[in-house]
Image (cartoon, rainbow, N blue to C red; front, side, top):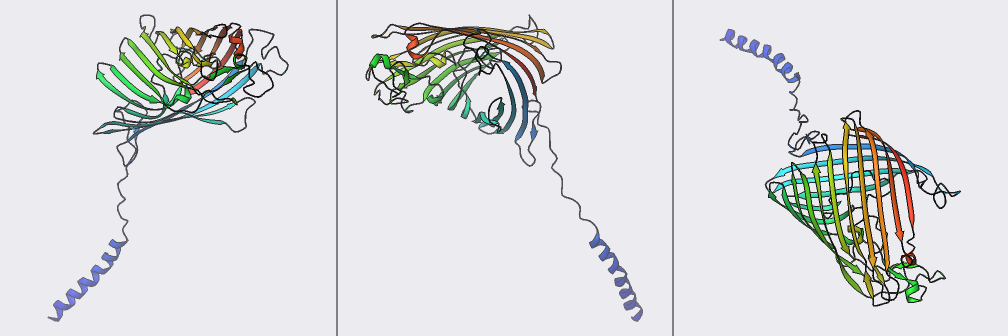
Length: 418
């Protein structure tokens, strides 16, 4: 009995140190959720740890040296004492693209921020939300390119716009895919981003509408925003290229605007257009050829993003004449070698307004851009571009400050994109 009790006590004492040592052993670490590559949406995406959401972070840097207005020595930056004949720009890009598959379709968020520092500007770079939208199923909500836009040019258009509808706006849209690359979109878009002036000539009313001491100005009298633009398109994207037909309805709403008089009248403007882009691998891999045409009545920026004519002209407090515009253009991108390419874009636009109490206002605007670009490695380029524009305005158009003008500019660009 005594021997057995002693043996049991000795065994218990021997186990005590072992229990203490076991308590001192390190605890096994929690499993680590390593970042996983997401290849469902292309290269560069990864899963956000702990979620099924894929994210891609991208961006870039662009630097430009610009030669401005050297087509004419008289009234250009080269011909005036205080004009900036050369300017510079540095612009950084940051882009976030998140995507999640749901039972309702793709849920996507896209943000594209621009940070721009121009010569002569503020020491603090200007920040621009270039794109920022949410997509859910077939819906798009946010700031994005208008669904009217299709072909916007093959060149950079750094200083002179390339001559097509090309604008960002706040929108609410739905896109339905029919299959085989065909789709249709209906979009409600903020009209303030596409307004181009509702003008009243002081010479027509014989009144100093902006109270500046004369009656020779064309004063903007666009009223407040009442109805957004309604935009629709039909589009196809296939191996041969892409094509689109599009239309828009735009309210031309008179008001006080920049004047001290009120124009209590309005009109309904509209625009229609069609464009096509052909892939041309028979010329060289990556080559494309594009064409586009558009017509508008009271919505001229759907024809040309930098249209020189207003949407409408008010001849009195109750008479409003909308401006008719049409434009055509096209372009080509050709790769001479895998690292050397050129692009050429040309456009022509015409604006007319039948003014009952004044001579008709007719203006033409055309331009051409050409570039040569060297891309020795993927995501990096160095290149030069020339951009030219000619504006021909008649006497009536001069009532609004539209006069004959020729602009020729040059750009040297270095860009890295990742």
